[in-house]
Picture (cartoon, chains in turn red, brown):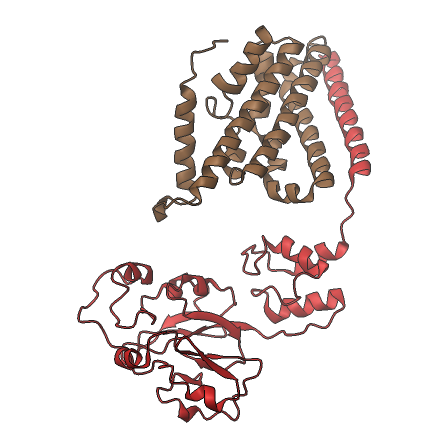
Length: 265
Length: 192
């Protein structure tokens, strides 16, 4: 009995010893030196591995930040807090730390946008409405009001207001961008939180049709283009703001007859 | 001849993944791209063959003569874990992208039941040393074959219009089932 015990112990111990020394040698030979900054940054990151930064996960993001291929504020979930910590580790200025929030670029709620002669009574989901005759609004570009963005948001940062349009609660938003993907009409865009002026319309109809379908549509009249010194251009019957040269302080918003270019309220 | 029969039996007729349902987790987990699936197959084949060699030697030179065959699971798992650890170091050194593509499934080869299964089959069926090597090689080739075919189908599935509720894991499991059915066509061809 004791013999077996001793033999068993020596055998397993011997085997363990042989494998352990083999691995120790291999570890020395095959060690990959890794930048210690990567693991430091990886610890700060939220480690939700959500992919909102566009990388495969938090570790991948950390590698890219250290290599300089991602900006320190590239993690939208971590926000300014994480960005400034990463900046401190890397010893760089954390530029452009402004939080990004989604903006719903349609003001045509149930009071403004005209309905088709039919009423939609199916499931309240944009993706379904999109398939069923592209929703019940006359405007094919406008918000369907199905609330797919609201259900896509995992942080409760979106809700449907009285006018059946989604609204963003900026404090709850983590800038993950899931609502942007959820919108079947591509009406939601991410913008820096301090950017307050938008063209709240995405329709490419001619002026006559625009006026017919919605009272707050951009008609593409071009008056904004003429008075903004290039800050706004009308492309394909829709105004577009060039934020690099557009100054909102002296722009006469009242000139936009349908009020589709306006301040966020 | 006997050796070739063992090889083809393990690779095709009694395919480890599709007939014995061993090693399913990397089969589902890493089969979304042909390149990484193939590499996973090669890594697993490498571990399988080395396991076959080392466990045979340990079993026949150390465990049997000293009547220690009750230690076989512990000894085999020690061998497998060490080999996988080595493969992981090696891949991390040689190919960083492959290392991140395989992710958690690389260390999970440690507990891949295909590998312990192989070691135990060799003991159970009383294979000789050469037979054991061919059995391990066959099992590895069979695993690589299965996971690469699966990855090929899944790459095509990316483009297919699948009902939403079937997307992702459900359709993968259905495909795996159909693939297993297809491999059942070989059953009985070689009986070992």
